[in-house]
Amino acid sequence: LYGVKNSMIKYFLKALEFNMIKKKRLDLKNSDFTIISSNCLGGVISHKLGLKFMSPTVNLFIEPSSFVKFCKNLPFYFEQPLVEKQWAGSYPIALCNDIEIHGSHYRNFSELKDKWNERKRRVNFDNLFIFMIERDGCTYEDILEFDNLSYKNKVVFVSKEMPEIKSAIHIPKTNETINGKIQVKNLLGYRNKLVGKRDIDLFDYIKFFNEGIIQLNRK
Image 1 (spheres, rainbow, N blue to C red):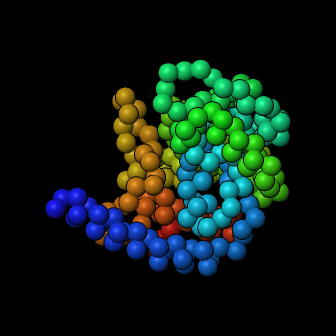
Image 2: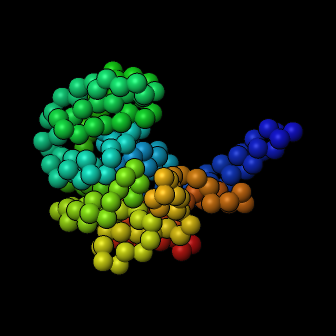
Image 3: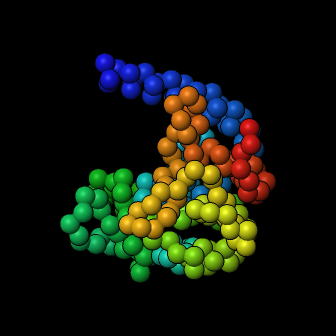
């Protein structure tokens, strides 16, 4: 009975979310864009909106300090070959020059490499949106450095209000504590069992993609 109840709740949430996503897709005016994301958040948003994956940073994560370095010189890193890093973990890690790419949702290095090479050719450098999340060891210095990147459209999800950081946004009730450090949790979880809204949906990413404006979704 418990399993049946959980399945019914998931079905109900998916149905509510589907209606919300339909409206988001209709409201989206900017479609030929690339999301460069420090974790799989960008790929999930692209999938929700029914967009083609225009970025190699799908189904993986890059630690924040490395991600900032990566973003400082995207053309250079996209020209570098991926090399497999040997380790004892359950997913593949690739080295792109001095950047570690954690293929957390890939079965093996070959799959990660093929998708990376395929999708990096689709990157639209004239219509870039950069996402970073304060987690995986992200420091305040990483956030400052991210905020100083030259990209027009960038956003960093932070664990508290940071009015001094122009690209920062704090989504209420999205913090967790890992090893004594407060960070932003996985933003893909549902807010509660009565609505089909996930934590990330409190960020108005449609307005961000359409107008470059960073704000919470008040609807």
